[in-house]
Amino acid sequence: MEPVNLFDLATRQSQWLAVRQTAVAGNIANVNTPGYTANDVEPFDKVLDRTSVSLSATQEGHLGFGAANAGLTTKPQEFDGVLMPSKNTVVMENELMKAGEVRRSFELNTAIVKAFHSMLMTVTKA
Image (spheres, rainbow, N blue to C red):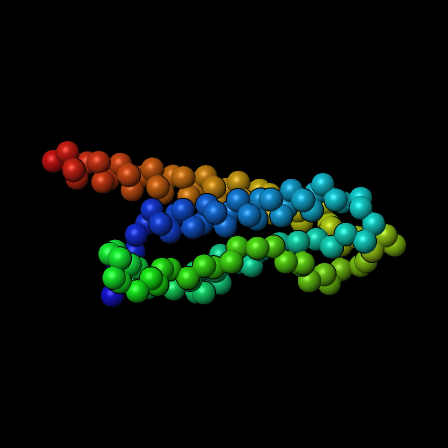
């Protein structure tokens, strides 16, 4: 079993959250744009499943295989609600709920990293 580097995991999640926040902000900005399709990112657990950890080159003669890029990009959301006459698929209530989820996730991520950092500092001072 490989050790889990909490700081790398937290960094990856904060990158994912930043992309999701950008997608939500874009959806809110285009709520009145005719024909606009709402975007979102895939769930973070799927990003983690697709991200593999592999060997990395530490010297010039080594083969260069780093961690796989998880491809944090937005994609159109599947819309199963009632389509507006303008063919816009953004539902403002859903986007505001997503924005709240992103904020809470950022706060949790920061609190976990801060606690882990504090534990590491306590161990190194002893």
